[in-house]
Length: 322
Image (tube, rainbow, N blue to C red):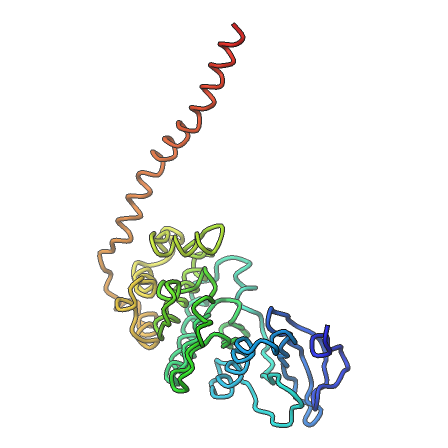
């Protein structure tokens, strides 16, 4: 294990004193550190030695740093450009609060808070999309929540930057978290701002109902469910939700990006003015009602089929006994 893969509290990395290790991923280790020049508390992200040796993954790390330095928004974690570094690592803003994933581990959030968090995320997305950036890996693990609904969007490792002409270098299509990835990204398409809006629709569904809309035992099953089936209607998963809020979720979760919200502003406008949302006659609801109507019959059929081998075995046992 190399030096930069095992920094200990109290060690010095250029001008930064390491305080503690706070997270570790397949690509890097993150430390809380203090800038000895001014006393600021910061986060230091150090790539693992094997990542530095891989040109594709190392370029991804550097692309994340470049995108982070470009973005200046209160809802996006800042990345600082320090030219005094002895080698490549990221110097980032220290984010207070808890990951949204930690909050969701306790179940659904109150509707008012879920909507405030969603609107804060949409504000951050409107900004980054305006800068030509698409996050492409929006999920609760990449969102810090501080206080009631202040957010910080983190981890732009597979983001695309249209203005820089850097669109993932062929690596990003294989990446993305299956529960939150959009249908077009699941089909290895590049995606655009509507990709992030789909992922936010999944996150909002989870915040309101306590469960993700598409499920499975592995990545393939989850994506298969997303591409072929409709989720449990939000008003079934949480009867307290209004038809207007359900309609907003359905618009965000459209499989076809052309039918989805065109921008973060459009999505935010509906969430802010739910009383003005027109509720459509949704095929998703009809299909769900049909599936629910025939589900007991299918269970009975499968149960009967499963009993056939048992009945045959019992008959054989009786035959040989006699």
